[in-house]
Image: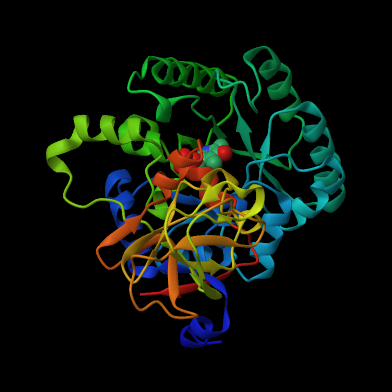
Length: 389
Ligand SMILES: *Cc1c(COP(=O)(O)O)cnc(C)c1O
């Protein structure tokens, strides 16, 4: 289907701006410089943007490699023809490690069971396993603590086909605060552990630690590779990151991030509701005047949070149309009384710009009490994604 056909044949669709994505990659390449590996994180269906479209755009913009969460995500990328390096950052079930070795994926390792199984697999297949050792520095999520490290390194010396390709860590709160003492502490711990590993005779090829916020705020965390998630999609990790970034580099900001995603839906019915009638489940909204109501064929199952009931608005003909009543599983109702000439199948923008108006992912996140990451990650993967200019 062409983009034009998509426009007429879908009830709802997501447009991805190729120029915005290219802008964001340029922006970060300038920040991290030419040397570190530029890896894009496309877990959770490319933060809800659509993994295949984003992977294609990433390659077009000379990104070096991918990070994903699961073996399934990595296999899908391979089967779609992406032959770049793929780091699986989440747990691979021990029973499926063989598939991961066969595909030459980079594997995060932080426990002895995985290491021992990888030893068996690599010995029987005569293949190398490439591991990225995750170091515990105080996030207390995944990671191997200093006490376990000694045993781990001893074992690693007897597993000739397991290649310690990199060591890495992940910061706990860089995006949550403008006070970066804890990040400094984690960086100190990381450097200590790296020294310990090196003094055990391991030539470490790579070190990495930075997600988007760290990449933006702390050049000293770039090391040999950056794992860029939210920033590539044109979203800031948080308001605090934006404040810290402007404080630190304010005068130097010439470009900024551009949101990649626009979510649209087509009006599926228009009706008049007389004054003093209630709209939707639970009868939570009552009309105060004769109202024109448009029905849109999307709801919480598509990723439009039910918390937005009676709170948010969509854009129709460049104007705001407020939600009336509760968000249903597949439908919402919006007020178009003050917007003239609205017709059946007109486009409504749920996220993004229309005319002079814009509804941002950050606004929707604030209204539903969450973060931008969750708003996009929950967009249903069945919604058609199309790439536009
Ligand atoms: C998701 C994730 C990232 C990317 O984080 P952003 O804030 O989206 O840039 C990096 N590293 C790890 C380990 C992650 O899980």
